[in-house]
Image 1 (tube, rainbow, N blue to C red):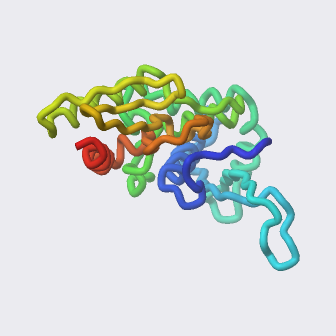
Image 2 (image 1 turned 30 degrees about the horizontal axis):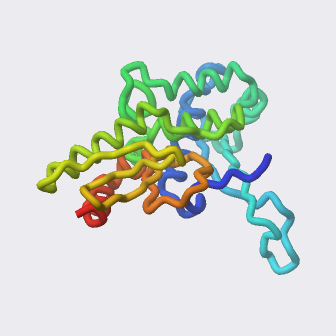
Length: 232
């Protein structure tokens, strides 16, 4: 597949680790659809170079493949991982994984109704079903994830209202033809890109700042501080 380039380096990104870890858990928790107990399987993920290695151990290209791996928890193995591997590419199983990520109560990231179980308690705070859903959708369809216009508008509205509370004037925003969102305070303006963190950066115009849905959820105070500094 062609390389998938995002705003940040994947290998060092907390959001990418959360997305991969959540997808691993969703797959593990979906194996009962194959007649396997979820506690019979453990898994993980890693990025591996697609290109052959050069003589001195350096990758000859910067394209990395995401590899998810699973193993039996029983010492010596019980054959469950092999059974799982044989079914893992089927659309029925992937549908089960997607259903696991589609929380019945519509939680914000994860809850006991979808992903949180006692044996993954140490990573409850890192489980984000939306990141995993985007990653799974890309793996299944190769369609680049995008932020829904309604979600983008919701983020812009919230930021505008929060900034207006901090200034004597009203902060407004406009969606520009080049895909950026322009926040304005009188004669001052600040152009930002609001996208999902898994989106490939295809906006030709260079924004003053990139804001992702993941940043909005995890680093809102810093976003508001930066916007305020540039618009006051």
